[in-house]
Length: 182
Image (tube, rainbow, N blue to C red; front, side, top):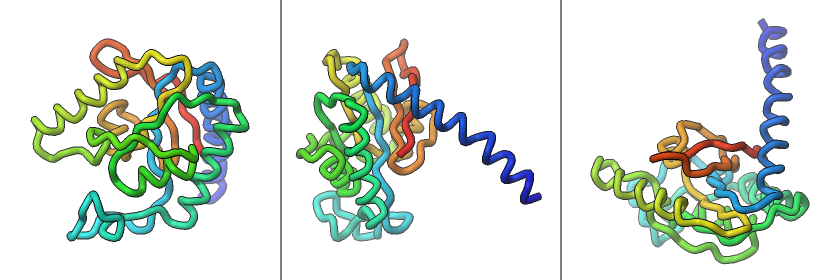
């Protein structure tokens, strides 16, 4: 059984490396939209006393997450992937991922916050993100730092913490062009 698991893992590794290489090629060219899931956090859920304006009441980046965010920024620089600007969920784990990775203050963008549970509010939130994406026409990359649920709703993909999904508008939705794993 262990051999089967190991064999499956080894088969998956080349495809992840290929996906990452293809993603970097896109980002070096610039002009793309990057949906970046925040880096590793401490815990699994925000506390009951959650307040978006108070980091002490939220899940925050773990030490491993801070290191991962730093690695994300170093790789963007080393791979010469130009960044136009960075929008972020207002949650501290997203803002901190952006600050550490890109060494600048991200623009807080409430529609990137965790998805609302009310269907109408959720739809409005997703439409605001799509409007931002459709309206982008810069020559460098636009990075949107957000959460798993948001990226899944936009793309159908479940990225790992700190994973980037490169997308482009297509029809009413998004086309996934590539992925980068850190």
